[in-house]
Image (cartoon, rainbow, N blue to C red):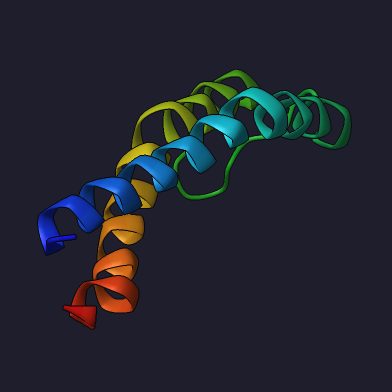
Length: 85
């Protein structure tokens, strides 16, 4: 298998892990944020409230994590399996 194929397979596995996190872990994280953070809490530096924190958490899980996990999966797959030719 060439490096491109291995990289694409690694990226696909990374994206699948991120999608698993989005489906299984994200509801748990949002529930914990809702239960543990006080209703009038504001993030000190930015002034974000509880609703803004939840929307940014969703953004991270839905868009940034698949990109990061896909990239890391591709690089790891190439490093582990790519040099075996």
